[in-house]
Image (cartoon, rainbow, N blue to C red; front, side, top):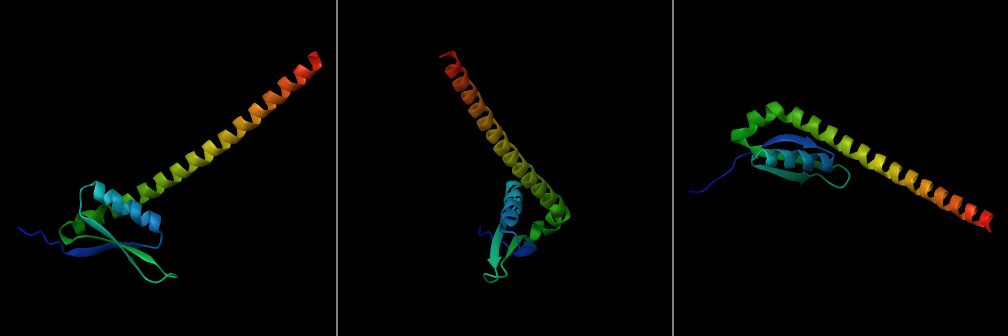
Amino acid sequence: MQITNQWQELCRFTDQTLARAVATSIAAMEFDVRLIEIGNLNQRQYVIEVDCEHFDALNEILQEIVDEQIEFDELLEFNCTTRSRQRIIIIIALTGVVEVIAILGLIEL
């Protein structure tokens, strides 16, 4: 038995990261998917193609997949920014504590 997929374009993106994330989400739902890069250096587009058999089902939920991925990426970016700020605050606080200890050590002499 030979399996042949008839591919149909589901959507296009100019953002490679978003296109990969959407394709990965579709693959995680156990649908056949492929991501194709087209265009030149100035106008690259990323085309997500799916098996024609599953096009209608995926087309109905495509916007949900995209929205959830955008929301996830924003949350991830927010968490990374928050952690970075927390690290800076911790470093400043520790530096201040060390300076206070050093000053107190000098006073006791």
